[in-house]
Image 1 (cartoon, one colour):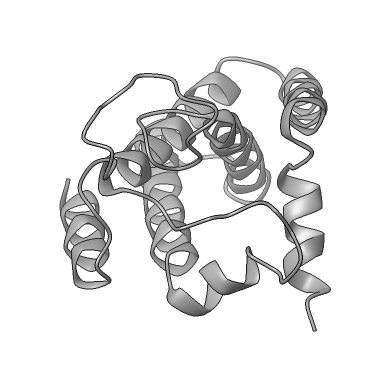
Image 2: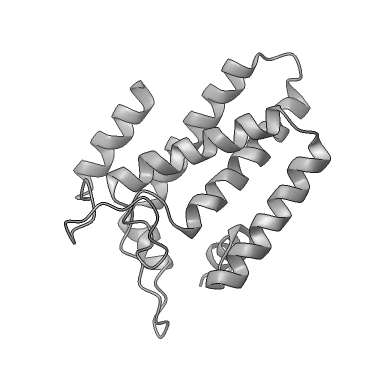
Length: 161
């Protein structure tokens, strides 16, 4: 809870709105990236949770699920905090592209962290192979739906001039 409170405070300092500036709160709004509770990127947060659980368990197999979940929350909060920096938002909006990313609402960032926790808990109850297959399937579905994904987005950031 402390991590989520710190994330909320950080996002407010950065000027991120609590909810969509449109004034409407929706559970699922794929056309309003990062403005509502959930969108296509929420699925990528689940993938992050699947991967993070698998990675932590690989190196710390005796850690209890609560500790692994705490690591997932801290990892997600750190990622959300960095993702909403103005310089990073600018990298997500290269000149000449029609896609317009304005950063997350506080609601979306908190929901993203809960999606990471969901991915972590799913991975805790499945095999590593099943978690990997789920991550691949999610990546393909999101890429097919919006032409983006964890791999595409990471490459865009890493290869940015």
